[in-house]
Image (cartoon, rainbow, N blue to C red):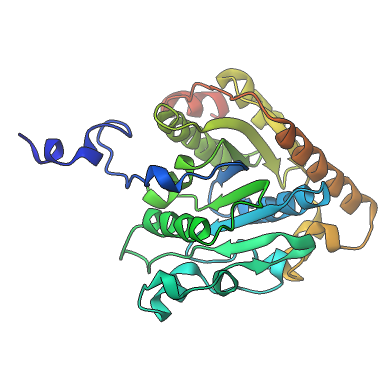
Length: 298
């Protein structure tokens, strides 16, 4: 008998060779639409997540956003500050979770959006998946998910990390943020393959992608046509989006210029599409060589 056979969690339940941490089935999020936002590092996942949370709240939804990156900067445009992380607060009470109150780790942001930063271990010292699991467990213990309509996980960009995979065990739909360039689409292709692998064991399905900070969408659309994917929205390269991050605000709090109004309208439209329910997409990720041939240049 091999060591792998001796450990039930490693018997191929999560794909060949997987050593992912499996969450307790009792920790499932029920009664809310759950979205996990993915994309290449630096592509604008947190900006997209926060503005999407704001848009859902404007539609009257009760929203909870969970940042899943050790940088813990997912929600600062909603709250106007860097809030303490779950892992740091747990350390303060020597990991006696029963000593915590909801107000210790859940913070109110723009238009009533509830904000949580899971945080994570220092680089090279632990698994982000554990922190995500503990965060959801805490939220359930304190009944913070019972009055929530929408949960958004803002996920770090590393496909192989447990912190990447953990939100997929809770999410209904995964959303990929990309740009109209080779590196972003290459990363999107790998994320598609990863989510598709997880969808064999979890309820999660891909919703589609958001073209972010891009004047055009021709390369994104060409890729989507080939693999059978959906572009759900296009956020143009508007400087007000960059400035909103500097001002620690959502795009909905910026001055009412024409370009700002157009971006707001696109976020509202995206929230409406997701709230109405999207059919799960099943794209076929390309082999690395094929995506080079599709998008590369001689």
